[in-house]
Image (tube, rainbow, N blue to C red; front, side, top):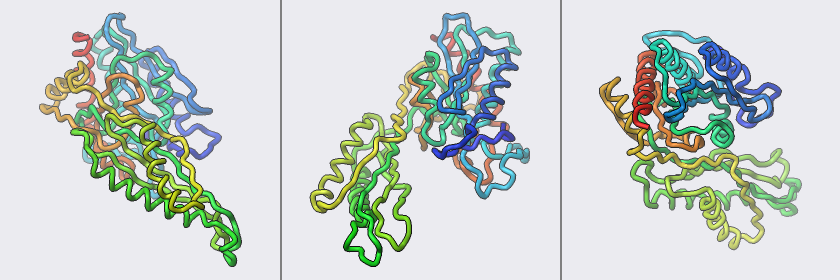
Amino acid sequence: MIRCPSVNTFGVASDVGAEAAMADLFEGMLRELGLEIDSHVVTPGRRNIWGTLKGTGFGPTILLAGHLDTVGVDGYTDPFEPTVKGGNIYGRGSCDMKAGLAAYLEVVRYLQRDGITLTGDLIIAGVIDEEHAMEGSKHFGSLGPKIDYAIVAEPSQLSISTSHKGQILTTIRTKGLAAHSSTPSKGRNAIYHMSVVLEALQGYAVDLSCRSHDPDCGFPSFSVGVIRGGDNACSVPDLCEVDIDRRTIPGETSAEVLRELHAVLTPAKAANPALDYEIDMPFLELPPLDTDRDSILTHAMVSACKAITGRAKIAAFPGSTDAPNFGCPTVICGPGDLAQCHSLNEYVSITQIEDAVRIYVHAILEMQTNK
């Protein structure tokens, strides 16, 4: 899987689906295990793929889900040539999260090898686009098979996460009037206008850090991550854009956040009547993950981690994941360290992959008997 590039294009159009080869490879692996195969095309050239190990029909349907895509490889030496050294596997995607996909396959092999028939279906899924807009998990949650519980093997060093912040990504733009830079008074500088917007947004970010916080996820947050504006230094720019990242905590909604943004910028507009701005609809709307710590799934994962590793730590996951999109109680627990994700020397511990397999098997069997 590491040798199969599946780099997300992050919204840039491409003739070849970013995960196309990886989806084909994963489908072949699922077929080799004798699973019932299904897939959905999410966007042209990009599809979710999953296989089902059928149960007897009396137990819960459990999903083991992971993403097929990786981040980019600029500056990475031999990213797709895996090496094994010191008990670790190195290469792009090794930690985030092809190790998790490999562990899922081994779970099926384990069950088949021991002749275990589950009471409910076990679904192994690879979804697209987690690293960008999470279109794959959104599509799977809306149009895929009905799921009762899900485990997502994002790298957590085998800690259990029942919660994480939500994420809203959108674009704010200011509009001006183009003119030659030798006569700037004949134009309206969209970059200058954006500076007014940014000042208001910086105050909003400070305000969020003073609000009530969630006991697990902490404070909501706001950040401006990208700015674009102007064509050349000799022209007054007529357009400037920023991409913003708003992290939400349980209880906050996307609609509330958009209302807040407009409320923050309305006074700026009143003080600067020439200010012309607009806020796009989000290109990513991910709700917070907030799985009940008293759910059957959480209890099964705690029991499994204690049995396999001798410990069971529950903590909020630092980043955002596909987990909230699956529409059912979901936990994150996977091999690898989040610090390795997106790095130029990515690796994952083989021992942690092996332990992850044992944890998943233990938890699945416990949920089958406590449906």
